[in-house]
Structure formats: structure tokens, C-alpha cells
Length: 451
Image: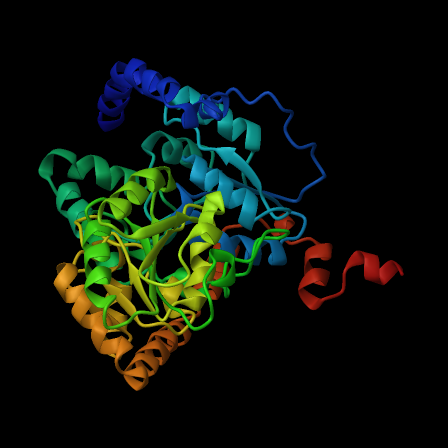
């Protein structure tokens, strides 16, 4: 009954969905794959022991799941790994971070005939999806074919939890959750919420957040290493890096920065908008406040004044996590406005103090850990941000202690990656672990044996 209603609504909305996809230039590139029109031939039998399909919506989910993909490649060197995304930023992240490890595919639209074609084409042995990206028809089709599905790094925000508890959809949600073979959740709170929404308790496990297992960021192969020097700044200048910012936040951040410039003449601000297509808008806003501003992508840093207040807009992909290394203090966006927050661990892994606003529903557990360890601090508006920055920049010992505490939080909470990988292994067929795979785990490759 629920699926009939869902598919009827989906069918009625299909013209609107297709028009939206056609209207957005960034969505046209993958439209054939989204519609299940896969023209390339499936992988020939015998060339891979298994196909593991990993679904990550966009950039954030790809970053989160990348270490797991690397671990699966290490464990199953002959397996075919396919990572699907919904967005172009997700595709770019897969191609940058997982080159040579996994193939990219656009996620199929959740029409029954589309997901059936995608499954028939890929012939997955296992479907892994990240952070509660639930597609009813896909999960149902996988279940009907006895293909296990595993949710990894699962979380349920407070808003989603309250909506999904509504009587009108709770029955449908319970039915859908029980199509999932196993739910690996970030926290006990998330696990309990999943059970309350109807998931079978025996299929729900708390394994932790695999974002704690992220490797230290590295420069992209062949690319320019982002650094103070690359931004036209000297070593003596101190950076405040504000990452993954949203409209409304940038104004407050720039106002806070301006209020500090007189007392800290060597202080510079880097703004990294969450959506880089907004870079021109952010640049215009900064210029409107009377500040010198440059953009990373245009190479205009050399034309900026060598002294005085200055803002750099980081409008390139894949560089923010590495640039946090050069920050004196970091601010993570999506938190001064009601978005829910982004990756607080990216600056923490470098041992940087982490400032964020009160809206942290998407990263509540990490925020709580940082606050309890005194490696993070909540700020309210421009005035609160300016006050915290002033206190830390004026006290090098406090700044260092806070950064060390943040870094220790990362170290103390690692291990979710291995726990998740061990559970995932129980859902793969024995053929996925060939003799070559066993040799690889022992460090003895077929090539080495034959040499």
C-alpha cells in the first residue's frame, strides 16, 4: 500500500523532476545514468570477484566514506568498487579522491524501472550507503534480489526524526527501514532513534563516526599546494580560516574580522563558501565593506596590498581541508545560520581551535566532544566570534592548548572505520575474498610470488 502511494506520487511528479534536471546544467551531464540508460557493457564475468556499490550523495558524504572505500580496496583488491553520487561536486570528489580505486556513477532516480536497470547492470554483491540516504524503491529492489544493503555512518537529525515520527509517514518509514540488512550508526542517540522509527533492534549497531578516521589531507596530485605563499601571504601573517560558510554568515564573519584588524594588523581572513558558485557574490560583499579582497582561482593575490586588512575567497574545490593547516584559528560554517553545520574535524585534525555557531544539529556529537574537551567553542553572531578570536589571538598558550585538545578528540575517537569494515565483510559472499585477496592482506601479491 505504502509503495503504491509513493510510486503514484513519484509518477505524477516525474515531469517536474525531469524538467528540473534538464533546466540545471550541472544535472544534464549524468542524466542518462540517472535514468538507467547505461550504454556501456557490464563488466565481463570473471574479471572481478564481486561488485560493491557505495552510494554517497555529495561532497561531504564522499569525504566521509573515502577511507572506507580505500579499506575495501585493500581488503578486496579484485572487487569492482562503484561509488554513486547525486551531485556534480560529489562526482568531482570521487574522481579526485578515489582515482584508480573506484568508478563513479550517477545515482539512479528512484523509479522502479530505473533502479531495476541499474541493479541488473551493476550486479552488486553488496550495497553500502552513507548517512541515511534512503531510496525506497532501490532498497526494495535490492531486498527482492537478496542483495544485502548496509547503512554506514548513519545519523538522524532532530528535524528528520520529528518529521519521520509523524503518524502519516511512520508506517512507510518502518517498512523501508526493515529493507536494510544492517544500520551502522554514528552514536547511541542515532541508534536509538533508528530503533524508535521502526528498525529491527538486531540490525542496528553503534559503530562510531568514520570521519574520525580521515587521513591527514594531502595536496592533489600535480596541483599547486594551497598555502599562505600560494595565497600571496607571508609567514608572519596570521590566518583565520572560515570554512563551508553560507549566506548570512559571511557578513558576520567579515564584521568580526574588521573589528579585530586595528589590534591585529597582521591578521588575514580566508572565506571558503560552501558553494563556490557564490564566490563572486561573496567577493562583492567583502568589497562593499571596504576591504581588499582576492580570489584563489583568479590568481589575483599578487595585486593585493602587502599590508593592511585583507580577505581571500577560497573558490577552489578540495583545498579547504589542507588550508586549515595554516590557520591560527578556524571557524566552521553552517552553524551561525540554521543549516546544521559541516565537518568540524577538518581543522581539529591539524590541532587548530575550532569555533562554530549554535546550529550544529548535523554534527551534534562531534560538537559536544570538542566542547567537553575544550577543543571547540560556540560563538554567537559577529560579536561573539570577534570576542573569541580576540581572546585566543591574545593568548598563545590558550590557543595552543585548545588546538591540542581538538586534535586529541580526533585521536581518541578513531576506530569506526575498522568496526564498520568488519561488519560489512560479513555480508560479502566468500568468493569476494579470493586467494589473491588473502595474499594481499598478508602483503604477498601474485606478482611478488611469481617474481
